[in-house]
Image (cartoon, rainbow over all chains, first blue to last red; front, side, top):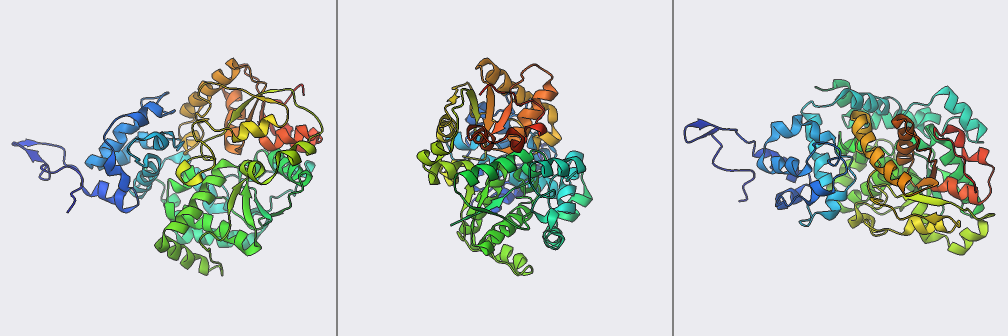
Length: 186
Length: 285
C-alpha cells in the first residue's frame, strides 16, 4: 500500500536525537479531499517563479507544497503563507506535473479553518455572509445611487426577498458555516 | 435559451453602474435577460471556498437550481461569480456523491440541481460567442479613440482545463471585443498578472494586495493606457480603490467592458454609474 509522508521518523527520534515528527495523515487528508496531484510535485519551482504574490513578498508556494507532502502539518496550518495566495491559478496552469496547486491551497485552508485558524478580517466578511447571504452590506447612499441609475433600490437578490434570505441562511447554518465563523479563530 | 442575470455582490452594492450598463447594453443588443430572483452571493471563492468547500458548493448549487427553475442559463458579469458557479457546476457534474449530498440539503428547500442542467455564462464570453461582431458593431453609435489596457482577471479563463474559453497565457477574446469599439488594445508586460485582490488577500493582507496592484499600475501607466477595461467588478474595485490608496498620480479610469460598450453605444454616462468610481472617468472619446 502507498505510504504517505516520510517514513523512519515515526518515533520522533533518529539515532538517539529528537527530531521533528511529521503527521503522515496530513498529505493523506489532502488526497482524500481531492488533492491527489499533491504527490506528483518534484519541486521544480515553476510555481514560485510564476507567483504574483511571491514576487512582492517572501511567500514561496513551492515550500508550502513540500511541507504538505512531508506532513509538516502544524507549520502549514498555522502558516500565514497559506493566506498569501490570491488563487490566480498561474502556478496550477504552468505546473509541468499537473499538480492542482491552487485547489490544494484551498483544501489546506479548509483544514486550517477546521483547526481553528481564521483571522479577524476573514471572520468579519464570513459574518456578513452568514447574516445576509451577501459578502457586502447594502448602505443608504448606495440605495440612492441605484435609484438614480434606474435600478431597484435593493438589488433583486435575497436582500429584496426575506423568505429566500431565510432559506439561504438556513443552508449556511446547516453546512456548519455559521458556527465556523462564530467560533472565530486564532 | 434566455439568460438569468446573476448580479452578485460587488456590482450591485459597490459599482451599480456595471449592473445598469449591462442591462442597457444587452437590451440594445436584443438579448433578453430576467433577474435571477432570490439569488445570494455566488459565494465568493476566496473567502468561502477557502473556509469551507461544502458551504461554497451548496450555495452555488442553490443559485444554479434557481436558474434551472426559471428555465434559463445563468449569466454573470463577474469573474468571481463565474468561477464559483462554473466550477461548482463542474464539480456537481463530475462527483455523484457530492451531488447527492448537495441535493439532500436543497431538498429541504424543494429544490434540486441537475448535472449540466443549465449553462453558466460570463457576459464577455457570451458576447464573443453568441452575438455576432456585426450585431455588436451595428449597435455602436460612435468610434472610441482610446488606448486600452485590457485586464482579463484570473477566474475568467482559469483553470483553463475546465473553462476552455481561450488561451490562459495569451488570450485574445476580450481584446477583440474591446477593439470592436474602435479602441486599441495595448500589449503590455505581465498582462495576465493578477490584480492582487483575490483569494481573501485584499481583506487579510491589504498591503500585499496593493503591492501587486502597484506592480500592474506602474506597467499600465508606462504602456500609455487611457483606461483599464476589466470583466470583473472585484478587479475593477481593486484597480479603482487601489489607485486612490496608492496615492500616486496614475489617474487611469477603470471601466467594466459593459461600461465601455455603453460609451460606444452613446448611452447617457449618468446611466453608466461613473459617479461611484474613485478615479474620475474623464475620457476624450
